[in-house]
Image (tube, rainbow, N blue to C red; front, side):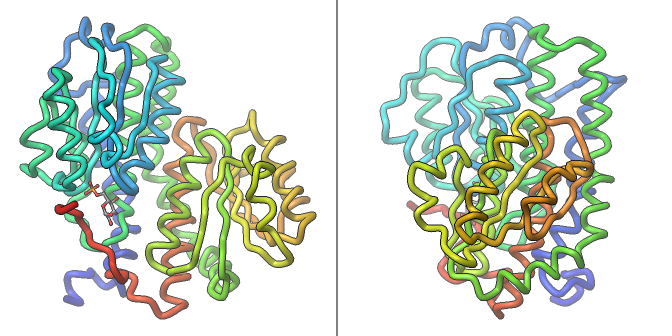
Length: 367
Ligand code: G6P
């Protein structure tokens, strides 16, 4: 067992550190001569131009990659995207008109609700693309098209590297659709491809800094509640940061779109409440900083995760963690890394069973 962990204390930490390779392995085979080539995608240019709407359907962390995917696909390819929890989609009598495409995201390829959602879409005559990690799994076999995420086997219940590769697959797909539909220029495409190729190195540089996050974790161990705030893509990242933390540390946490604060959450902020703010979207910095000030004024203790160079943030935060700059569409891939590490260190700080949290299963194959 110790050998399987490759010298790491837990599978989760090992898998966190495997992310640069997993992301590289997922992106690299789909980049050829400065363009995106998805060999396994059996869709003609006409098919891609004809997409009127995309449903992204998944559970858990895979659903969170779908939320990021919505922002990225809508902004780059200008296709409307609806993100749905598989357990809701399957019983909702969804409206799937002609020109709708369904994307099911699943690490295991065996999640019961996700598989049922796939079958529901197909029964209504909709083609399904699976973004799946386990080769030959049920969702991979039944989907009309499959894009594999090359994360390799993931053992820890809390997903890290599979989640990261799902994001990569969605970026690849968004860029492909955007370029086929003429929504981005060749220059823009090549700049973004270059940024994709740099992601593994940038993830590695955050991992090399893990002691900084470990330091912050000591502050979080005794917390009763932790709030995660973000706007736009950072809201999607906040959802995952919050789920990761609660899964393995059993600390109650919630993610909020920062603009929603004043509609309820702010009443929960009192002296010493911990808030993690994510600020990677330059056009939203000002709005986010004013939300951070709002919670600080009410006594919150704030950790901000932001891009290198956004020193403006320092005035209004207690702790700060800088992530490398990248294209604004890809920031989830970097901002999530300190959040994974934070959850990991808080969990072991509390003496929890980090690889096998209570009541949770790696794959939920029964309803
Ligand atoms: C379980 C796992 C999560 C995962 C979710 C969906 O809850 O603990 O980490 O995100 O299932 O699993 P899937 O295999 O479909 O990605």
